[in-house]
Amino acid sequence: MSSLLPTFSKPESLLLIPVACFFLWLLYRQQKRGSHWHKLLPPAFQPWLLQQAAGYRNRAVWLLLAAAALLAGTALSAPQLPGYSSSKREVPAPLVIVIEMTPDMLASDLPPSRLHLLRSKTADMLQAQLPGQTAIVVYAGSAHMLLPLSTDPEMANNLLQALHPSLLPRPGRDAAAAIAKALALLHNGANGSGRIALLTSNLSAQEQAAITRQLRKHPHVSLGIIGIGTRQGAPVPDPVTGQFNSSQPLSRLHEDSLQQLAQHTGATYARLQYSNADLLQTGLFARNTAGTLRATGNPSTHDQGYWLLIPLLFVLAPLARKGWLFALLPLLMLLPPSAPALATDSGQSPMQQVKQDPVTALQHLQDPLWLGIAAYHADNYQLAHDYFSGLDSVIAHYNRGNSLMQLGDYQSAATAYRQALVLAPELQQAQDNLMLARRLQQRASTAATPLPGSAADTLTSAPSEQEQTGKTATLQNPDPIHQYGSLDTWLQQIPDNPAVLLKRKFHQELSQPAP
Image 1: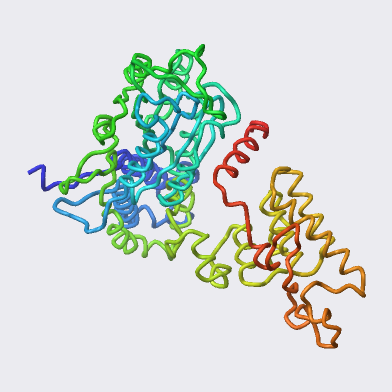
Image 2: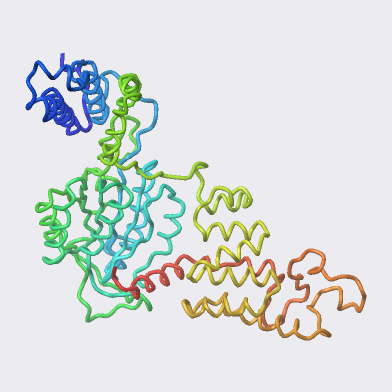
């Protein structure tokens, strides 16, 4: 018999029904008693001297309100009808992968190295987590977000291949800061619920205590711990030179500290393995009927409460003409916030939209930086300059300089490149473009010296390419020092080495004051 009854994903919402009925009963009694004049005047005079309120005599209004409370409370409890099945693929709960990225990860007790196996294991988790969201946090002496909550494993794989302990700006080990950043990602992007996979080799007593306190404040977050390394250990090479130091102790897996944290937090622990047995032991993943790895910890059900909105509208419709519905407006503040969108309407990343059709991307993107990039690729350099002008970042200043170069304003372009170099002095592309902007500014200031490769070099009166198209003329003869090729080709180059970008990002995050 129990199998025929509906189940509720949010049974606490059913408490709204008796609470609402109790307040309706109080209002009904208060109206039935009448006003203060009903207590002073004799009952015989009341029909002649007082205007009788017919509301309390018409009990249909109160019955409709009680029925509305019943339907609303049941709908908010997310009922699931028995025997219902959905053909849609369930979306796993969000997962944040926290990875230790100290020099210990270069040890080779897990051949070819711990770092190599970490990259492979993280890639497996990213693939098994689809179509759910996954974020990656790396830490050493400081914690940094490598990837926000995303459903793009290709972008994550590119970042993973560039990941190295030398990119982390601060030496040491602070797993508590990494867990705090992971909890913040789940709080901002998943309403505070999800899963955390901690991949580390050692935890101090202070880290264990801090992580335990943090997880107790987030009961809807589950933790899985994976130990990296072996008890025998291995020497750690220098992250920069790759040389071994004989005086440095071996890096070992401190399994006892990880098991203690698992006991204190109710988490599960497993040692890192070449197979996926460790992911199965942590409980974060399982195998489906086809034998492939899939994410677990997904409490999602098929909410059928929206069907109750139709009878709810019919119940509330007769009350609309009496103005009763305005009293229900404050209840809208109690509704839970909607979940954030997992992807754009097109299902493509901003980079894919810009590459496919920059004009269409201008109509759908929201981020000013991507709007500027889309406008630049659509050859609307003035619009791109306007978008980049409102931003203060290395990429914004650099691309604003590119836009000004295309518009022929070399002096302002040089200023934009200098602003980019203030934030990132090692950005070689901005240094080269700054020299190119100065050279073109000098040539433009001399009326007798036209741009190389323009029609004026042939001493003819034909208009230049810049006059015909409104774009900067193509440099047909590259500078012998800087082999640019064409101005368009060079200006569209951006620093695309993930390792360089990650190192700059981590250092910039560390230099910013804590909020």
